[in-house]
Each structure stands twice: as structure tokens, then as C-alpha cells.
Image (tube, rainbow, N blue to C red; front, side, top):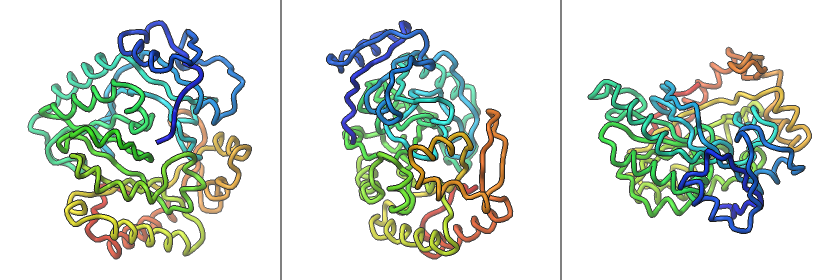
Length: 345
């Protein structure tokens, strides 16, 4: 795990409850500055990655709603945090802010009350679907990496307790980090970790400041033994060269097959998401990570799509993508037939 020791902590007045005070106390040497809004930060004069390393923001999440997903989970829970230590070249969270340090929301009690009320409003027993056969599933990490957040605030442990003990709900989150602190918590299979994977040499270029693919794969058995349900998240799938991306994914599948025990394979499923990129992020990356853009921005394979936020995204041409999906599914069947694909798009 990265050594995240911020030199500046920005906080809103309404974030200074017991939890906010406890987080602030963890960093006695940091400069603490009160701000008016957690999503409108002052110009600190720091470079993009320096902000992610040196700044922590504490805020109160005011808009709380459980949103339908139907893919990685049944619903997306209200955010526990926003932003991440990493600087992945394709990250959609970073598209909406000029700088995006980790922001922790301290009103966890209110967030869990919202989730509990929502769960109890749903049909029970739950109709089985691809997200889970028994429990209503909630993604708790759509806007951050929970593996990082877990070591920054007791609020995430509180959320883990809530889902472990809830009779109708379970939690899920995707991660690119291996936080061994999580191994001390036994969620009794009520928390699903989705380990994000892609070919290792591509990850080194686009998964900026994350744990290596080799480290992520090696940790899967351990997290299962600790009581987690562990799936994998092949995301984003980046297509490069007519044959190279296929060869690289076959090698990744073989690494996974060799590393996992039979009992871990029996419970593991996957989700597959092909790359969607963003025009404004492309322009930003040209200045800070141009080599990544040679892989991410390939207009001859891609088509434009207007996002729900009004910006222009670029994704693989729908006819080509259909063929790519067929190829990917066939490779999974041939190399790791034990790995069910929960959904692919």
C-alpha cells in the first residue's frame, strides 16, 4: 500500500463530527484549512499527482441516493469517498474535476441509514439474478478505491460491519490495490472484492501508481481465505494490434489459472468492460501521460458518444466491439472455462 501522509487537510465545517475529528487527528503535522465546499477546492499550486499524494479533503455527503446498476451490483450506494491516490489514465472520476484528491465523507451513519431504508423497501426474498442469488448487492466504491480508504478512516470498517451483519444485503467494490489490513476483517462472504486485471505491461502504463497485476493475482487466494468473496474485473479491455491484445489476454488468463486454487476458482466470476475514453481527459493525458494515449485514443477503431454529463466520450465502434466481445468470450472459454462472465459490454 502507498504511504499516504497528506501535508494538507482541507475540511468543511459540517464534516467535523466525531469521525472527522478522528481523521484529522491522524495527521497532526498536516496543515488544516477550512473550506466552504468539499467539491470546490482552492488552487494549491500543486501538480496533478502531487495533489493526490499530499492533500486530503473531509466533507459531508449531502445528496444520498441508492442508484440502480444491474451490472456490478444491484445498486450503487451513496459514496463513502471520492477520488483516489492512483492516477489511472482512463479514470472516469477524474474527468469531472481539474484536480481530484481523496475526499472522505464523514457522515457515515447517515449514509448507512439511507442504505438500510432502501434495502428494507425492496422485495424479499430477493429474486435471483446475475449480481447475486441471495442478497441485494450494493457497490460501495464507484468513486474511490475502498482498499485505500479502509486505512484512512474507521468509517469504512463501520460499513463493512453493516453489510456483514445485514440479513438482506452485501457489499462489493473493485480495487487495484492489495491492502493487507483488510485481511484482519472476516466479512463472512458478505463483501465481494472485484480485483481489476489487465495485461501487466499495459497496466504499468495506464494504471498509474497502483499495485502490480502480479501482486493483485497473488492476493486472491488470501482474500478468499480471509472470508471475502473474490471476483475479477477485466476492465478496461484495451484493444491494440490485430493479434497482440489477444495474446496478452491469453497469457493473463493462464497466469490466473496457475495462481488460483480449485476452491477459489469455484466461487470466482468475472465482469468485462471494454474501454470508454473521454476527449477532455485525452487532452490532459497528452501533457502528463502521452504514451498511454497511444493505446487509449485510437479513432480508427472508435466512435463518438455523448455522455450523460454532456461531454464527448469515445468507445469502440459497435460493430467491431461485437466481434471483440466474441473473441474475448471465446478466449475465456478456452483458457479459463471455470470463470463465468457475469456480464460483458
